[in-house]
Image (tube, rainbow, N blue to C red; front, side, top):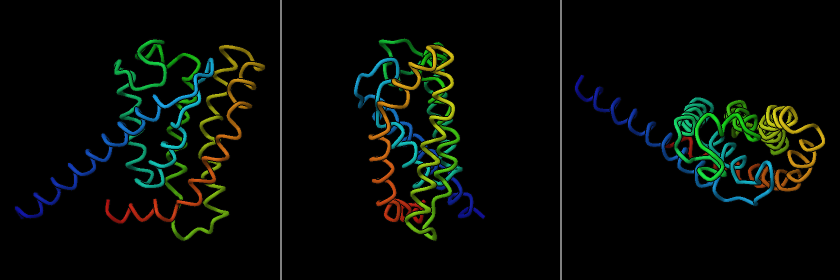
Amino acid sequence: MELIKKLESVNILKKISLVLFGTLLLTISAKIKVPFYPVPMTMQTFVVVLIGITLGWKLGLATIIAYLFEGAIGLPVFAGTPEKGIGVSYMVGPTGGYLLGFISSVFIAGFVNMNKNLFVKFLLISLSIFAIYLTGVPWLAYLAGWEVAYVWGIKNFILAEIFKILILSLTAEKLLAIRKFI
């Protein structure tokens, strides 16, 4: 009985560590950016999908929710923080819809598995990235208009996103192997 409790404790600590490591990766990916305005180009979409693929949808969701919580309480984890504000006030700004889209994106990416062929993996990863834009672009359009949302919220990002999808699709087998150790 004691052994089972110790194993459960180790498992819980391992999962908490993975979630915290994931939020650290997201924070670092937010700070690696091309300074577009009003939405900077970062590596966050790549890392969100990476988290979904490697951790699965449950731990992936926990990681994204923890990351958003960290940002909501004022930790400077987002792109442009602290210089462009922090906390909830930052989250309702131009990037707020994209941040919200991380939740559905990591959920979809969590269903990429080894039994799928490369095309299906590419499709799931594309849908995962699209989920971020599905909430991000309308929110940006609400704040700045559809023309700004198209140019600064979609058009400038298309090639980079296709490249990210391609890399994630080609490396998905290796990334999925990590799940065996979780």
